Image (cartoon, rainbow, N blue to C red; front, side, top):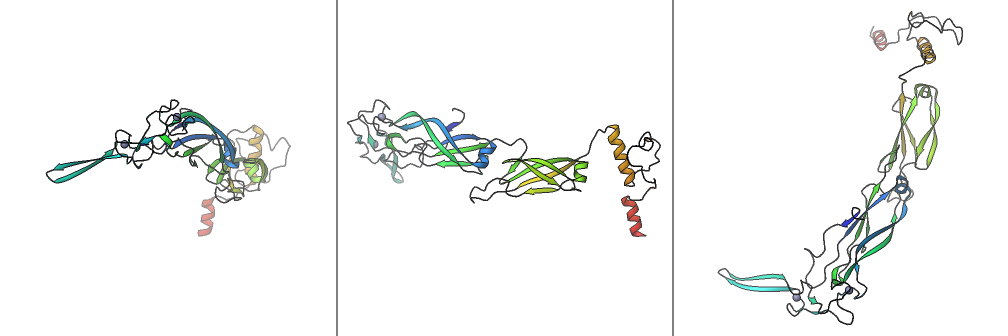
Length: 306
Ligand SMILES: [Zn+2]
Ligand SMILES: [Zn+2]
């Protein structure tokens, strides 16, 4: 677990603890990896790690069973030592942690042999973590009191489980919204089609309407990610349609597209170059008369102005 698990916010023994009582244990961080599906639907995960835990032999006191820690004679249990010095400016009071009891106020005269007086031993622990549906990359789940035990019976720190979510191969996630880029062919976009789209609940059929333009968004309501705080509410899956223009054409495909171009008035039927097949082989509908229609934007502009 070395790389996954490390002490987090520094030992509680440092600044911020009051003298005369045992310091709190460190907070711990555990990095938990989740699949995309687990993040969407939530999961019960078992985690295992080694951490300092209260010593069973001395129940955390650090004193050999049968003995109890006694009040430190040096500081009378306050955990601090006051030194008064006379200076030119007057009396200076210097307060420091007691060196004999290390600020704890109590000393262990016969230390527990199991933990050598620390009150803690390293122990393997297993915990269940309830991962809520809708969790995202970098979220933290706090488990109060599940961090390191404090030395000599000090209160435990917290355990922070930091989640890491494996990305979906096709769906992009942004908080509660999911995005999918759907490639359709020019014929599917023109004629309409039923296409299969990945969702968190499996593949789903989606209707692409005839005449769908590139950039059209088809929204599948409630097929996104559950809201973490509003139970039952779910984001949407946004299907963004992209129209793929073929970069290579078979001769038959070219023929058909040229027919389409003629039909749309974009290409003269009597073009010299590609006139090797369609009109003469008799298959398919005969092209209509090859008059050139002025449908370009410039022509239409001209019409509008004049
Ligand atoms: Zn012990
Ligand atoms: Zn002391």
